[in-house]
Image (cartoon, rainbow, N blue to C red):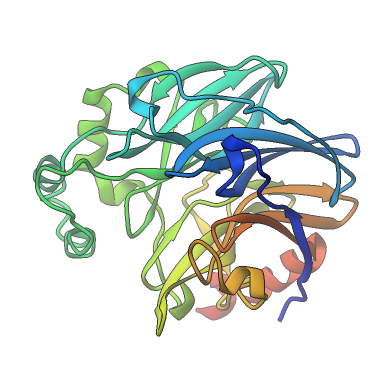
Length: 339
């Protein structure tokens, strides 16, 4: 098994109004030896904004804003901007997050060229009810039973979360992951403007063709979701995602790892048959939500990959692993080796 080091807690709540109830699930950008964390900051009442801090090196806090970095501006996000991720594609940073209006939680995007000023592009995932979703996917007989298991009512909007962009265009297209339970789906477009209702109607009608990763092992059997932006390696795209299983005290969220083809990212090369790491520290086992390790960003220092994650759903922690060792371990579990 691969050795992962728990580096410990990176960031906790403060007495400031905007982050007095939780800090978690950061988007991560590395510039030289500086690591930017754009994190979900929660105030009492479960209202979320995006906070910002800088680390000097992978774990040492150097600067921290005392006001929110990004605030909700529109009705679709008036209860919060949650769980950000960030990827630089060309000269543009794509900050994806979950827009929450107090009822519906859906993937949205903002872009920047300087990490200071962001332009919001709104919700980019489908906005449909479960009844409409059921009608669209009825031709996908091989998967429909699994998707129906998480229905919340015919008139409820389908939750489409965990929006994560690949850090470059693949075959000329913007490519991103998103999650309608229980699988992770993949989407590729020339531009965000293509993501129209008509696009999503066709996409969902052929949903089975757009599945990226589906639960397989016990530690992820309930559902999976996108985690960190993919890391490009010589062996393929390293995908660090979260997997969920039911345990005696509810759900357990673990960090998981898999490898996918660089040019055909729906082609799975390998997957760890066990969690990369899971809750075993006190701050992971007990929190606003117990038993949570929720990875959302990475920073590479030489061969050491630092993985930043929400722990217990109320603080930010970090774990590290040798990238070369992780790739070697994954390749030991490649599909070609297991067939």
